[in-house]
Amino acid sequence: MAKDLNQSKRPVGRDRVIFNTISYVFLAILAAVCLLPFLLVISGSFTEQYAIQLHGYQLIPETFSLDAYKMLFRIPEDILRAYGVTIFVTFTGTTVGLFFTSMAAYVLASPDFKYRYQVSFFFYFTSIFGGGLVPWYIFCTKYLHFHNNVISMILPIMINVTYLLILKSYMMGIPTSLYESARLDGANDLTIFFKIALPLSKAGLATVGLFLALNYWNDWYNAMLFLDEGSRELYPLQYYLNNILTKAQAMNAAAARSGIPASDVPSEPLKLAMTVVATGPIILLYPFLQKYFVKGVTIGAVKG
Image (tube, rainbow, N blue to C red; front, side, top):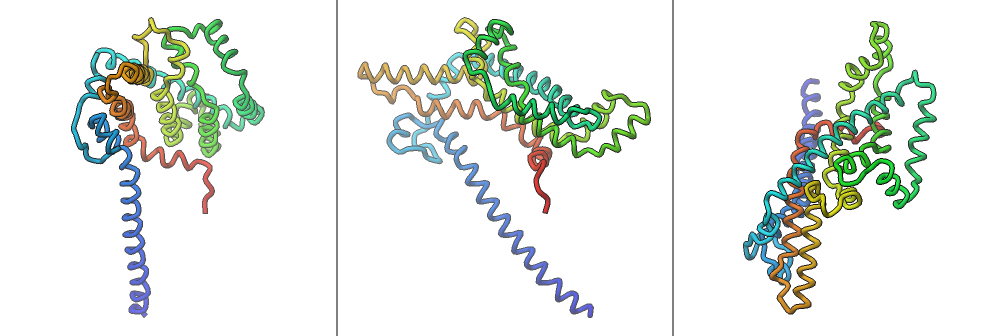
C-alpha cells in the first residue's frame, strides 16, 4: 500500500515541476517583453538623430551620441532645481494626502458613523460631475490664491475619491472586534486609528501612496495653469522638460524654414532622454512597495 501511495504521488510531483517550468518560462518571456520598450528608450536616447530617422529605434545604438543629454543638462542648476521641486511636491503631497485620505476612509469604514453610506455616495456622486475648467480656474486663482506658489501644485490633486474608496474598502475588512476591544480598554478614536487601523492597512496605504506619488511626480498640468514665466524656479521636473521639448520642436520648425538640416536638433533622442530622466527615480519606489502593492490592488477581488 505504501508503494501505491508513493507511485500516486510521483505523477503529481512531475506535473508540478512541468507546470512551474512552463510558468517561469512564460513569466520570463513576459518580463522581457515588458522590459524591451524601456531598453529601446534608453538606447534611443544615446543615438544620433539622423540614425533614428533612417533606421528607426534599435536595441543597440548604431551611432552613439550624448547630444540629447548635453542639451537636456545644458543648465544643470535648472534641472536639479526642478528635481528638488518635484521631490518636495511629491513627498509633501503624498504624505499629507495619504494622511487625510486614510482618516476619511477610517471614518467612512467605521460602523459607529451613522451616515457613512450617505457620505460615501456624496463623495462619489460629486466626483462624477464638475463645473468645468474655467470656473474651477477662477475659483482657485481668485479665492484660493493658487498663483505662482507651491501650494497650487499640491492641493488640486491631494484628495482622490477613487483612492479614498479603495482605502475605505480595505479598512472595512479589519474586524470590528479589534476596535471594540480597544474601546473597552479606554482607547479613543485617534488611538485606534494610529495604533490599530493604520498598522493593519499597510498594503492599502502603500498602494494608495504609490498612486498619489505617481500622480504628483508626473503632474505638469497644474504648473502650466498656475505658474507664470517669471516663476521658473518653481517649475517641476515634468513641466521643465516639457518646456525644453517645446523649444526643441520650435527649433526644428525654425530650422526647416531656414533651410538648416533638422537632424542638427536632436528632437527624437531628446524625447527619449527626457523619458529616462523623468522615469528613473520614481521606478525606485516599486521594489520597496512591491509586496504591499500586489496585495493592495487585489482589494475586493473575488476569492475562488
